Length: 507
Image 1 (cartoon, rainbow, N blue to C red):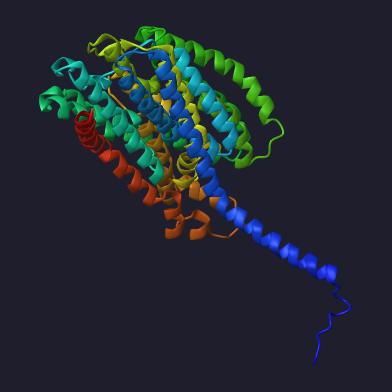
Image 2 (image 1 turned 120 degrees about the vertical axis):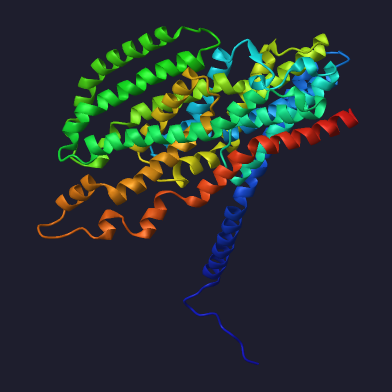
């Protein structure tokens, strides 16, 4: 009988070690494959714990009240809504800075979470309009119980719709979602006469106005930077001249933005006071930045990569300030209906404006920050990296455009969405790059001047080939986002009407 002998060169210990290495390698591949699922389950578990804690705190605060069930249910819905706002809406404030590598993902999450919570708690206001944007007349609701079910349906429908939008990777307006929810629940509760259709028409107009205005302003600033800095022979000298002025414009704009939007619950100055604040901040910032930029630019190479370093600090500041203002404004989308339900449960009445207890505001602030940490990175990457390629100059234009557009819209009384503005600005930057690449004579001259004598730039040098143009803006994301924007209000309204019927039936 033949026997197989082990080769002298492969002793038993080595074979066992090789076999063990292969097994460990297989286990490592399995662990790597299941890690995303484990992360999703962990995030879901943390979110569920937060929702349960919110409901539990409502139980403690209400005690033995006969209406405790309503408030506990509303607290759970409000916590769920706050998580979804953090997962979807906050991405617009920090995504350009992350996409341009001015901030890491972890740094962006930390800054956004801290400043969102600070904005909600410091400047969120003691009183909010619970009937979002005045779109329905609460006096036409039959009784407080019907009103409570309507607010619950509105809150839950908006949260569910935003959750779906986050899942498909579409940044949508949480304000529009809650507006649609309130409208749909109101119609189900008291008929079409309950809705203020003039206000709804203005909101519908903002779907078109805000993203276009944001895109145009962002494209205009990018055109200025390209013409006056990027495509100049001496980029550093041009940067010393214009970057301080651009950053001073941003500082003045954000000062006005914070006064008008982020601090409106604490202080409401007149228009001339706001303009005066902007002028003073511009002058002080310009005077301080000229020597600082000159020192930063000293020794930098005459190339675009050097210019990007000068925009990092303004981008970090803009991400923080946008997050603060967003927290101050959008926390009402999570806690406004919850505060209305609390008021009705405690007093038995119906009010368009009510005081917000501290514990209700804490649910909104904590939920937004937690939702951002658990689910925000996906939307941050999509807005900051996957629509069009970002660098610090383009991200600067997006952030500045967002603040300017909100200020202009507020001055004219237009109910715009910060989400639509920010994403519209990203698209504006991308589409402008396509146009400028194909039609700019200055860019052709600049590229040609960098080639050897007698050489002519080809299509690849000028990025004129079809593949290069398609890469500048991803049309699939563009169509998905536009479709989500268009259907947000009607989808949330229809869902709210169904939920109102279900809640009132079982309630």
